Image (cartoon, rainbow, N blue to C red; front, side, top):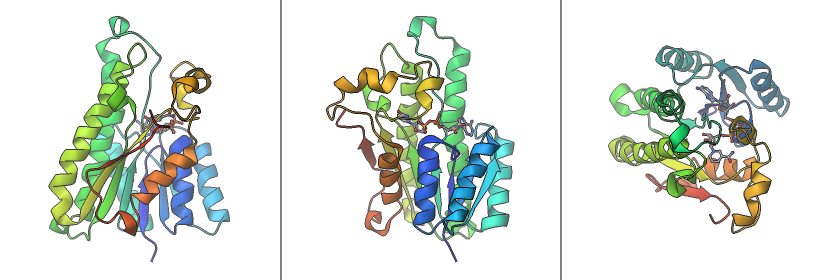
Length: 248
Ligand code: NAD
């Protein structure tokens, strides 16, 4: 039987690339999406055309009832979860801190931190031998912003990813004795639609001269790091972070 992986925000960008790579590595894939069922269906169809198994599951990861429903659907349709990628994330318009309101910070924390927490908790409830599980692994998609701080652009987003990293470290130690590994991947500036949501579609090309490797990254380069953390070669790696940020 195939191992089961759930990828949040899996209908586009880094999540879609990770979903397709996971399928090529033999996983049955739960492709979570919040709003764009057509995009999620396209990822599922591509995986199925390649002979793989995938289903699309709608849920806003910041909403507890929707996360519980998503995991129930995953249990019923694909079986026990082995791997979780907490990839769903939001980035709001570039802004100085002087202009930010608390609602913005709450929105960013709701998806980037609470969403990851809720999904990780549900995964642990299934993976841990305390609940009859057989172990597993979790990868949290953080950001180089957690180290760099994103001044004048998105300090709120950077702070949310910093919180996610600290959650990754604590959770990794808490569940390691139960055979669950927890790691993070910190992408730098990657060519995806996220920058358009952040209000600047051409951002990657604007900032690339400041990146040591002098280019933006691809979604496949991030997906490769994510999937390595689920591999047997990563069996002794937990509480670690892979920076996929062109040397930044
Ligand atoms: P993206 O905007 O293309 O994809 C993010 C996905 O998450 C979208 O499909 C979106 O619908 C989904 N999503 C957002 N909120 C959600 C919610 N509440 N519930 C369910 N799904 C939700 O962006 P991406 O660049 O592919 O980003 C993926 C991850 O990588 C994010 O966590 C992001 O913070 C991180 N990241 C991206 C970059 C970059 O340069 N693109 C850099 C560092 C980190």
